[in-house]
Structure formats: structure tokens, C-alpha cells
Image (cartoon, rainbow, N blue to C red; front, side):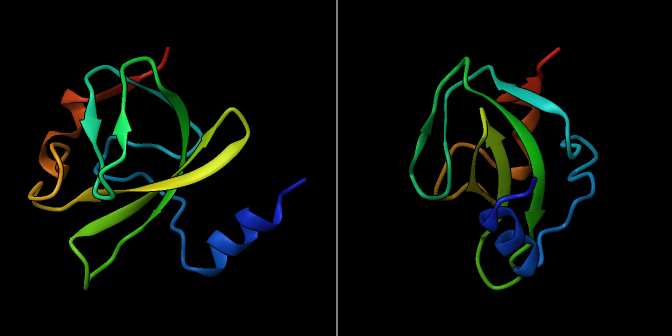
Length: 100
């Protein structure tokens, strides 16, 4: 059963396809190196979540990444050029790995 929040995210144009040829919807990931997202939220090693999809933002510098962490859906921004965070699109693999 899908929650209201999941339907709202879809209504906002969430894309359920691989992102950067690395983040695949339904696949679990683990933070391996601390990073700060575009909203200045810290993500620490050991944090785990399942990638659900993303919403590109052509006007802002951050793309919203939607995840499910133990049944709690949330999102965070990945900065396109890493000016506001230490996690940029070009270096995401340094911070996140498949949780196998």
C-alpha cells in the first residue's frame, strides 16, 4: 500500500529511473563518508536508505533525491556544483556505496 506522501512525490514529477548511472530505484545504499547535503543536513557513515527516484531542478542548483529510510520517506538535495555542500554530482561515489 502506497502512502499519501509517495503519491504527492509522484505528482511533483519524481522520476523513477537510474540517476547518474549509479543510483538505481529500489536499490539500497549506505553512506561511507560524511557529507552535507544542499540543505546543510549532515549524513553520517552507516546511514542507510533505498533510492526511490529524483526530481531535477533546472532553476535551482540542487536535484532532489527521494529515499526511503526504514519506511520513512524523505528527500535531500544534491548540489550540482558542490558550492553549498561537499557532495556534488561528480563525486557522489566517494560518499555513497551499494549496501550489499
